[in-house]
Length: 255
Image 1 (cartoon, rainbow, N blue to C red):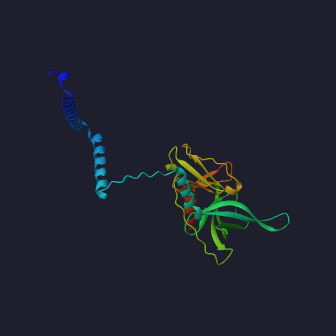
Image 2: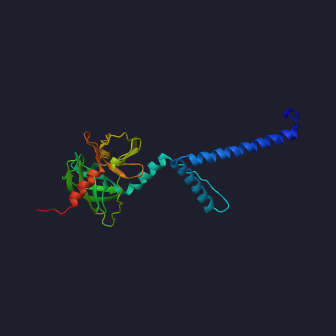
């Protein structure tokens, strides 16, 4: 019988038969190719199938797929919020032109350990003068510990200007500039908030205002990578270098 002699119902049945035969042939070819494929290709497919089955079994009678989109700006906000209680505004007592004692900005500083030792910018803070640390309106005297040729000083938070106020702060988490990858975001938290993209050069360079010296350099996880300095010749000090100096300062002194 010629195909031209088939009526409409017969043509439909013939088309269904062809589709059925084609699907069987496709299945046979697929199985054959899978058996010949190397394990490196088959393994990911098996893992996807296993994970899909696990998801279906965990939710009885219903499979829900939820896509969570995390915006970069949300990560920046979280990184800043994570360190708000770790950073202090610093001021220094000076005598103004009228002979009165006033306070001027000495940049910023951030806590390094639970004992209240923190780091500040050596371009703005020295062992001369009276300094204060402020956070959330609370004011504390700070005591000089040591200066480092790397461009920073170590100081310790002392008594409160108001004896009723209890010092509260959070020791931040520390990152490592050596672990940064090209293209990752760097956040600077000083007198303002700015960001840049890491280009692979670990000798970071920033334009820092006087009130911003001693600010934090963070990654998107909110971990500290280092400190910014008002010194234009060395505007970044890595946290690794700072922590080594802190460890040396805490080590028992031998005569």
